[in-house]
Length: 93
Image 1 (tube, rainbow, N blue to C red):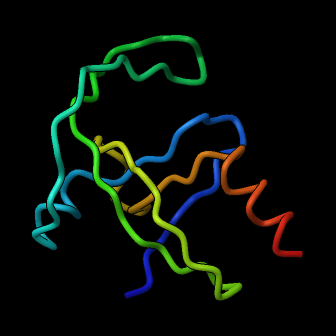
Image 2 (image 1 turned 90 degrees about the vertical axis):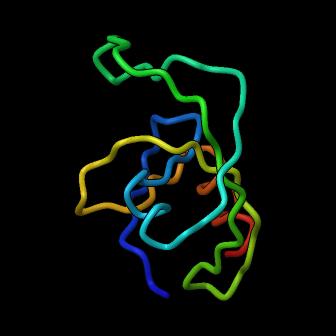
């Protein structure tokens, strides 16, 4: 399955859209709550669920990522945190 995703070079973590995991019956798990801090410095959401997912990138590289479950814009299913994804991409090139 191909998923619309966004690479966020300013994010330290990766995220997945809550509605998507429900419609696909993916198994998430509880974790100690963390505040989601937005780019403008505000925090108005707590994340308490995560999901481990094997992702195959267009380069053919496959990797298991931990994604935090949260509300996202429905046009984007996954947000890949920049530091992790960019480091992996550089290693492949």
